[in-house]
Length: 291
Image (tube, rainbow, N blue to C red; front, side, top):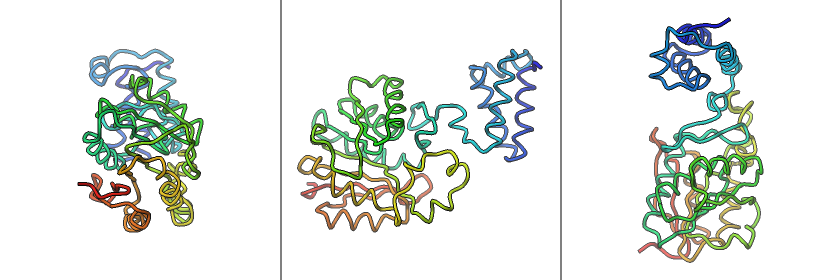
């Protein structure tokens, strides 16, 4: 049965209010309607009394059911906003979160003052969100996106194309738990948002994360620090003399990660907080203290 755009919106909002408050349900219904119709919010409002075709009505019903089943909005839409970019996402990669803006901003700030055409590695890249944001802001940076997952790299490659950054951004399969392949060479900076959820925390994840997001990108070992230990051990050799390492981490892990860095020849230069005022990222330099 065909419906007007207004009816589609109101029916979706009513259904979503079974699991969300009115404000959230309204926002979700509006986003879904824009997505399935291919119209802007302004166009949907202008066409509210017009009838949508049967295909749009069916797509809207299916999208609402996916949300009601607990699937995250980003996967239903197939895209998500991060640092001014609209990125393609699917269940092979984590949904980019505002928390990650902290390490991204820190890396960009430092990269702007590196030597000309700095080489930057985004390790455990997932969707490529951090490395692509750096490439957007640091116009001469040569960025490598690396992940062990071929499926994640397919998403990252799609985003490189979507952001029109193929001239300066490449994708490489690499394992953060083993030494880097020699062909990768040396980097001025390595930035990473590695898996850091502890084994115990993995058992307590909300269903929207546990049932849909890739566990490969979440589980960081018994204490959540396996990837930090390995990256420091194995990837320091991929840094140029005086190169920089940026990590995102859980707010509870900052002191432990800084100790790992300092006992392995790094000088911690900065620790920063996310939008919710939780400590979230660190910048460290290897081999010599910054002037």
